[in-house]
Length: 348
Image (cartoon, rainbow, N blue to C red):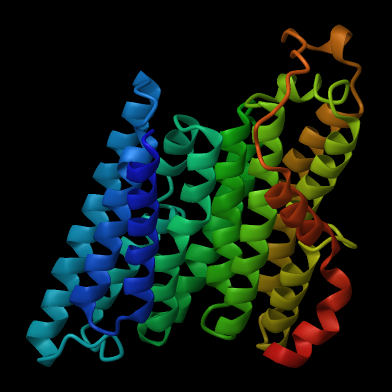
């Protein structure tokens, strides 16, 4: 892609998200979401592969539907209340519609069906943008309007997402689909604690972005898109294989890795709010997700390649990928648990 076009598209992505962050008016927020969607579409379709075009079309249709519902709901709310401000969401139908539309935008269950299919059709870097940056603007809107939503509905969405994210990833062999289900499960963790401690939602989002970035950049460096390709990576770069396995366990939330911190805080907050049953169910749902991360670790580190895989051993080609972003995100995805007391002081 032409570097000038790429720079324009990436700056439009940044502009759309920033516009949504900064707005308290529904029309401006909607405009930011639309700029975001339109900026990523050429990035998704840049390879002109039928799967990429199909994924782009699916993504465009779901995002356009969600944007139309947001516009309709905010207009309905403005018609009832006489103002477009986000903080004044007094119409229950409009509020429910906006929550459904924003859940569709970030891929919360049961509006998650587009997410694995779209991510599967994209290359790994565009998939990384879709899994991290594209979640920021809708989540910012959900956080701003959280007090207007029905707490029971948010809890139901969170529980369903963690279960669907765990259950859906069990039978997958494609790494991008596994990461899509991982994203759905993490979104469930963020939504469940939103009504009690929004700062924990932000913490979980930050940790999710770090861990997912490390996972996608590792897969990009090793050119792996299927589980059986992972089995051949250790002969090419053993250190990368070790760190990738640890990053996956961090995504699963195992101590002493970074991914344990947000889960620990969220379970603690749910118990504090008098919801021990919800906390128990969430912890059990995390175990389902942990199974498929362990499966990936097993394929990477405990199988000997020529006897156990049908894929061709890759050439040891030199990569042009910058190693600094991967190194930084990997270190942060593995080693931030010791600063937990500092974070507790800041957010609690």
